[in-house]
Amino acid sequence: MSTKEELIAERSKKRDALRSAGHDPYPTTVVRTHDNQTVIQEMESLVASETAITIAGRVMAMRQHGSIAFLDLYDGTGRVQAFFSREVLDTEIFDLLVNTVESGDFIETTGVMFVTKRETRALRVTSWRMLTKALQPIPSEHFGIKDEDERYRKRYLDILLSEEVRAIAITRAKFWQAVRQFHIDHGFLEVHTPTLEVTTGGGDARPFATHHHALDMDVYLRISAGELWQKRLMVAGFPKTFEVGRIFRNEGMSAEHAQEYEQCEAYWAYANYQQMYQFLKDCYQYVAQETFGTLQFTIRGFEIDLGGEWPVIDYATVVREKTGIDIWSASAEAMTDRLRELGVTFAGAENRERLIDALWKYCRKQIAGPAILVNEPTLLSPLAKKQADDRVVERFHFIIAGSEVGQGYSELNDPADQRERFLAQQAMRDAGDEEAQMADMEFVEALEYGMPPTAGHGFSERLLAFLMDKPIREIQLFPLMRPRE
Image (cartoon, rainbow, N blue to C red; front, top):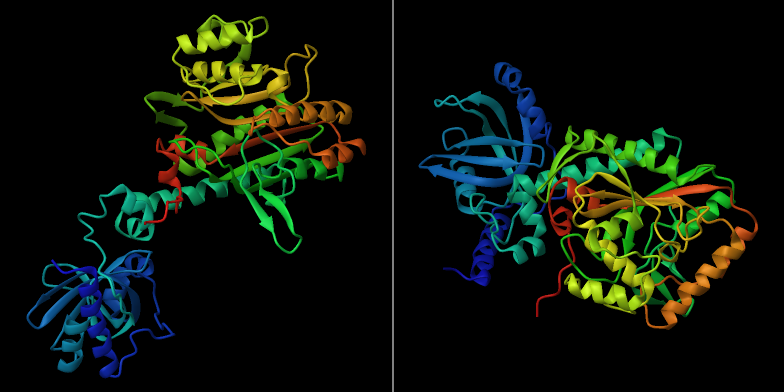
């Protein structure tokens, strides 16, 4: 079997042969008249009219039989078969094709559509030229790339060779287009907020840190899609804003978690969390219908109907029913013992906040959903408004197939309360909890100018991964990979 270097050397010789024959293997212009999809759609009229057309594409397959050759050309919109004949082409040009063109190359062809003896529609080529000489062969379409590591590293080949992976890329675009459209149709203004921050806000997560050389200071990549910035826009007088953008969390990897991913967050002045969860439920249903054409999904073995009932469930009640622990009265020691009995692995600072969260996550995995979780403990939600019972906040989570796939709350707009909660979170950070939130006193200052009652929501591409019933890395175009040694 030829080595990679030998294959490149062999193809390089063919590239040089093109140059010797006066053909540029990498020309700067393309003069095609039709893309392949248009040819396919207008096939019968093109055959009947014998109109000369020019198409271009990558050679996906090549078959030669003596003085004729068939090439399958793919341009990203569709495939068209091209028919080459020594009888039609000059012998020298035909031989140049046979001797220099291989699968993976891009070529431009001119001719007329006709019907072959085997009733196949093809382009009878009258002239051709090289557009890009590929120096490495593409893998066989039949076998594709089987090694998962190789698939992710060479995602461009994975997409080229796999209809399923190419469909994922298209579905991803449709999903986020539908998300944007729903928000725009409901009067939300799309905004873009900073990615580099002095203090991160809007989530419990370990951030990525870097250094800003021009300002000579350390900064962080954001862990939310501009939560504290969008709330400043509420102070500024905008009634509805949303952002779809990249966020970064320096945490573990799993089927549900990535370190860089797309997220949508929105903020709605003069609304509360109940109005927001109805809005977001409608958004999920719209996006699912627009993207997949259905509201019924099979996810992780659960049968999910987004068009069915979305029961509202209580946080403390669910934990008590499934673990026997009353989160309001149980000691940290009792919760720790129960988690160990349940075989739950938990790490980090063993404070009440993390222990209660670990209990909830154990329970969550058993809920099929869709369900709307409410009444989360205040100590777990430093940015949400308290209810009349100040132990809980006005926050919701959407539960689907045992996981959280969206959340929101009535935003805290009392600056004194916000200051106290930030300080409590900072104390947790100082005690070693790297996921606790940083105290952003400039945001507190903005609240002192007054922010109207506001509701917010946030969800990420985890929702898309769930609706497709795939690991999150599989629905990303280029997941992060460790460099090869």
